[in-house]
Length: 50
Length: 498
Image (cartoon, rainbow over all chains, first blue to last red; front, side, top):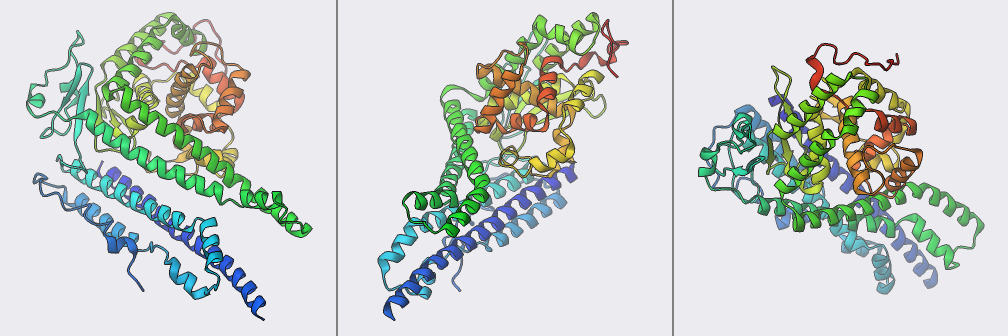
């Protein structure tokens, strides 16, 4: 019974850890995409200045 | 580097160890230590998520035209997405801490008061008896009503102040609603930011004329299709769940939900059509079928039920390890709040059939033959429907089985079949004893693809073939209690199929 409870607790923690990992990955992707968009605009600005 | 925003604001703090009013309890040390380790690990894990420093990123690129920068930021919904991610992690952290602390309190036999309660309301047919002191949960024998259906003597428990179950139920439902609303927002963001939508908008506006880009856009669109389907389904289902929860809060009580489902089950079992299914569908002789019918009515009528007000996880039916008979049902308050009808019927069907142990060989054969091949299940788990139905989780630790073994277990299929029958009745598709046809199947299939069915019903539809599902709905009554009667499972006049 105690082992079952431990397994349940471990599973709950694993689910949480997965949520954190996914949020970290999602944020990384979001920032990467945002940076790309900003850099594209920066290139345009630089071309205009040339 | 700056400290994480959540650590600074302390959103992950103050959720544990601050309950000075909790009674002192004798904890099971090793389990308690394990929980403590997990709580520490969770806090550490939370620090891996560092909310994005958007202004630093913008500064490092250094666009001169700030309006362009602002336009991109708004178009990509950067602040909202950032807040959404933080909220998602915070919600998950709070839920985990609540779950772990409640498990620890339960293991210790304690009742913790306050927002992160481990209060358990013990309920019987006769009404609600609850104790905020002790016992945590009444023994099943104490809770059983007498032969006249009167509530058991609960004078010890009722001497303590009763828990306001309605209030606690309301709290849980409100929390669920808040979580679902976050999910709705997240799915809307996915849809708003999907490649499909962005590319289609651009093409519609004539911004993409280059053939190569159009080709690439078409490829992206195909790739994005599954994400969009998933987001749409999830959105519809979350909105439906919010509606369910809001209605439950307004129109019913916990006990009302449970007793309404119990009444439905008893009425279902009492019908001559049910008796006929036992005889014709499952090949029982008429005397055994009658005994079975009555045994099932008694089992569902008499099983003590409890609602664990601390539990947001799964509901369980407990069986006596010596006799193998159903002992009681412990409903998770979270599941009851989310979908009272389906979860109550699901667990009561386990009681009615003694899990799988008392199902007829014919019923078990029909369930086994209704299944899709394992390789199709393995493919389904990666589809949007499979993900929404929760097929992708390959371990079900509560059951010590992997997900495929758990979902294809005859008793689990049977419990889902019963909830499907009730859902089809509620949706006006067909009554439980009307013959299931391919037209009925197409209707439920369509509802599933529109995200309008509960996940456990989706699981049954997905793991079975069309003909298989029709077959079990038309033939299985799922018999149980007459198992010990000699000859109960012998074919009557109908020939058994090998």
